[in-house]
Image (cartoon, rainbow, N blue to C red; front, side):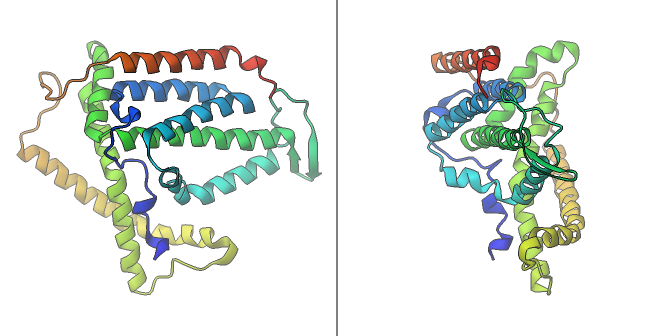
Length: 285
């Protein structure tokens, strides 16, 4: 039955109650830190720079008290795609990608296939970047309720209302999307179990099991989308029945206030980001 356990492998969108330092940080601070480190992630191509950022992300995971095993379990559904993408980068980007901080060197070449230190660096750096973003997003949703995330996003976008940015509507859409992630995983699990009970085979396949599973997943898309539209319609009717009206004029029960902890952590991450970006040329590789 492990082939059907999708819900336990969905780490994004699941909140865990706690009193760690990461839980106590203001949602706006967490979102700001995610944006800062994401920018550093995009502009840092060296082993050293990405190792520094990844170490910071790991430190946040440790400080949150959330299990590494749980967070990494969220990578399992995407593992086949990650492996295929990494192999393509390793085998076909050998001569196209110049390694950062290293002299280009080809280890193996056969026709269009070429493995070099550049392609190897590209694979490792890409995996490190993926883990950085994955850790940050998983931590954001695991240590912050979706309601607090929505209020945080709305508060950050509020100054832009003067130029017509619908801050409340954007935060509402994000909240609904996050809430539906585990719901869709659970529904996919139910559909697969129902089809398996009727004779569908989602296991086996040997080495290329993920190819077989990917082809069979096509038959699950239609019922999953039908259920998604049904849930969306139910949500619309429920909001309409409660006379929900978004936009200007709405008051908030929850109000956030930035404290010394928030300013200290934001300042430390901003200083780290500036140091990594300014000194990235000083990194040997």
